[in-house]
Image 1 (cartoon, rainbow, N blue to C red):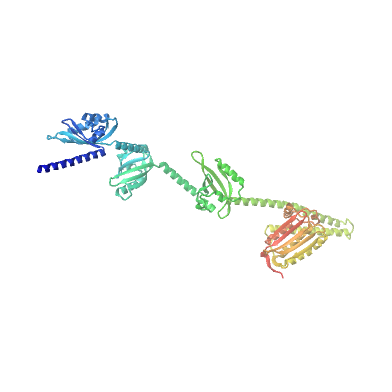
Image 2 (tube, rainbow, N blue to C red):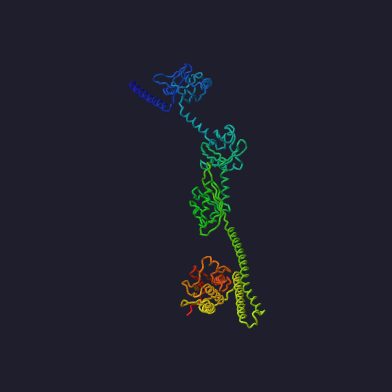
Length: 631
């Protein structure tokens, strides 16, 4: 009975062992891992199925012998492998190495071998047991990774948290000039610029103490082998538990210099006393400096994306814009003066410079413009120009005055001198002659004309010098007009001219200079009568306008004037020759003086005339001059 039980137990054990062996073989196959045993005494090699497959043999057909195993070793690795075997047999030490084999199909594979010695009773090595693993794919991946590591233009390295690099790629040598052996024997802090050591040490210490994130960035200067320094930006991944780090670095010297230059340029542009803005090729604004806002009133968010046309005043001639675009489109720089419009609507002058910005292909990508505010300069130029024009006008007026004075004074003076001499010498006989009475009348009239001329000149000069003061009072304008008509009615009758006067029913009192208002009416009526032919009519109408102002209109049926003659009539000493004016000599100051007197009252003088149809002159006192209505 016991034999049967032992037999059953033995079969179960064998089955279990068989299953374990099958699992082991499957595990070796999955891991590409084979094992072997070599008897030194018998020179016999026992190899597993997977080891045979690694070498290219089908274990069901043939198992590799010792000689075949030696022959499969790559010729370049054979000596090293043989030496390892010999040394192990001699010393009894285990060994581990990698080498290449040439399979039966000619393919080269890389294996990782590891073995240990087994000893006899006398202590000598009698056999060796080892494993091999096909690591070809891993070695290929390592090789490719090493190539990437070495060929990368970036500086890539690994090191420990004590401050040493343990491995660096060839980019280190290309960038800094140091090889792996030279650079890795010293702490990298010895290469860091003294001004950057503190922040570099802190970054390293924080990483080692776990007080910083595992991944961090540090920028510092490294000393090259030639003694110069360059800026490097490091991206570091630290592994505190493994006391290691991996770092990737870039030479950012040029970029940092460019950034510094750009920062300086940006500050210069921002602090410029001129407005600066940049547009794309379509004229869309992409950048403005702070002076632009100060000059135009527009904030950055209001103009970015807009066109500079928002500044267009409408006062710059179109041909300036045509020249502007022709110049910059042909890669030229345009300079010139323009009038711009402020956000609040005010106009201002700028001296503008616009230049194209080119890329490396000499193609325009942007335009940069500067605006210098020249409003004060233009105002000064305008003031100077106005002063010159006024001086020229004054000189012309002086010349006109001298010429007209020569004519206007000489004519009556000749009459006075000639007639008085005739009377003095009694050329026509005793003084009781009627002819002398006629000459005395002429002398009187000439004297009156001279007196009127001098009065007008003095009044005109006083108005121009702002020295004429009005003696203002509340007056009945109807009464002033009626009294003036009575004064001049005789002259009208002599010329067979009829005067008609009409007025609105409720004309208010006005606050004016009574004498100067009479002078205004006298000048207007005298002028109208002078230019109206016999049988003609002069009409005076007084009205209260809807805006509260008071207007006096004087119209005649005379010859009328064209635009040029109206301009002459309003100029000092300007006299329009109608063929009738010389019937009554004038000074040429009547209308200019009347206009000046009206303006002193805050009023206006307007002329409407058409050749052949007569003239209408309207003198209007503003509503501020109205005192009360006349009942």
